[in-house]
Length: 69
Image 1 (cartoon, helix red, strand yellow):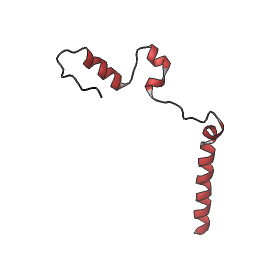
Image 2: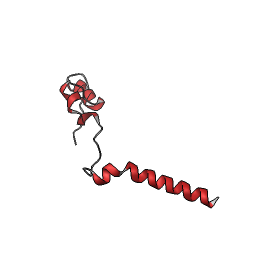
Image 3: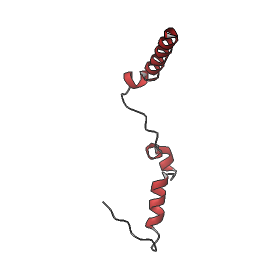
Image 4: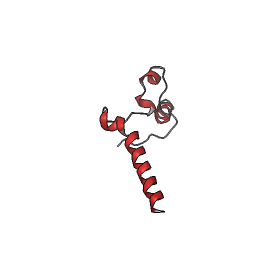
C-alpha cells in the first residue's frame, strides 16, 4: 500500500515539474490568455464582455450614471 502511494506521489511530482519547465526556464511569466491581451482580436473590434457592456451603456442616455472610483 505504501509503495502505491509513493509511486503516485512521485508521478504527480514529475508531472508538475514537467508541466512547469517552460515557466521555470523560459520567460518566467504566465501566458496572457484574456481577450484584452489578444491584439489580433482587438484590431478586429472584438473586446471582452465588460468592455462591450461599458461601451453600450456609455452611448445610452437613459441609464443611471455609475460612480467612478
